[in-house]
Image (cartoon, rainbow, N blue to C red; front, side, top):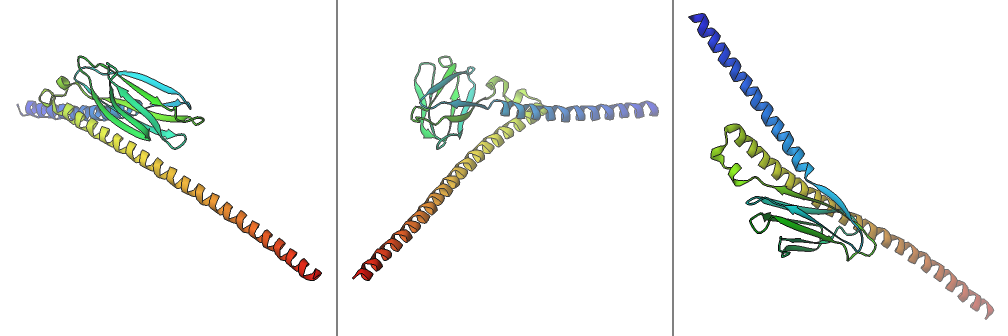
Length: 221
């Protein structure tokens, strides 16, 4: 009897250990998949000068989707953008913006949303834009009481990863803006230094020429 109980306890411990390993593996795999999905949603495109580029995004009913964009390269890192619902009504617009964010929600009358990037204000400079549409979970599938502890933990990790991605995008945008400001300041300092050098050289040449003419006239007199 003691041998049977010992074997039973060992089997229970082994099953618990296996379940624990399976839980860790499942959580790790879900986190990796969430990272891949979050980074995979971001797309980049080139908007040529004096051109308009649009795309549509379907959104399921009762599901929220977050649209974000950032101008990563070109000119002053600015572009015009608009987002429309299915009835072509403007939901939000950005003028000469380097980034933007808007949350849409699908319903019976709005299941497709249209986004347009307008670079018509630039004559020669193309712009590179990175954008994403991150879809949330369906409310029926996201109820906490319908989830087991592992799924709750996975859902919490996915939400944290989403927050981390948004923070990372904001930091990248801030870094690019600071870099553009620093490069613009360096360029202005360089141009001012060149102007000062040319002006100083010109003043020196003028003074030498004027002094030479003055001495020649005085010698003649």
